[in-house]
Amino acid sequence: MPHRVRDTRPDRRSLSTQLKAPEMSAIQVPALPIPKVALVTGGSSGIGKAIAVRLAALGCAVVVGYNSRQEQAEEVVAGLQGAGHLAMRIAIDDPASIAAAAVAVTEKYGRLDALVNCGGATTPVPANDLDGLTDEIFDRTVTINLRGPFAMVRAFRPLLEKGSSAAIVNISSIAARTGMGSSLAYLAAKAGVDALTIALAKILGPKIRVFSISPAGVDTDFVAGRTREQLQKVADRMPLAHITTADDVARAVVACIVHLTSSTGIVVPVDEGRHL
Image (cartoon, rainbow, N blue to C red; front, side, top):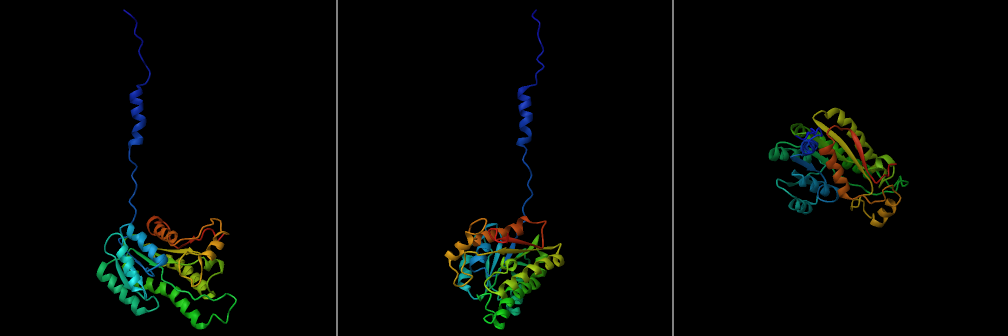
């Protein structure tokens, strides 16, 4: 009888199966905290509109705040994905308008998961024209760009505390850091927004996270008289050599609300490296 040699080599099929088993196991990824209800001031155009579009695409009901552009705000709402959106007049320099908006949002939604303070205004005045920067221009600039966001936070804090993984995102400007902007009043107001962001993060945690997004040279009509050619000349000198778009800012806002759940009180530049 022929002598049989026992095959001690491992079962190739068995070994293959063992190697593939871990690869076939699905890695469990925690669900992202998508806001159910968000409010965006200045949402009728530019950066605010882009933010509303991004949030709606996530499945969020968006309140599009506007001051005077009702028709544009309603057009934005009509074009958003999903349902439950609303155009609402919120004059951020008028305490009565803000209070009325807080009541209306409470009655319709009963909660707020994200507040994006995007509403703002500027009157361009050359930095060296101190006389041209009148008290009236200075006071109005600070009222809209600094007091306005604070008043919104104050009014909507109770609703945000009822929300889930709530976040406030203030749209600031890299002008606060560089000292170069449409006016000295504007850059001073935005510096105040950044300081307020840090202070509010300490006060409103752990229920509410607070962020400041700091863009530069965004391709919108926000600054009167600024051309795309001017923006391109500046962009060419930046590390990323790119003109910041409204959607670039919107994606940073979404990142803060949805992804940066262990961060608060930070200022996030969206400026193609201008701050460097």
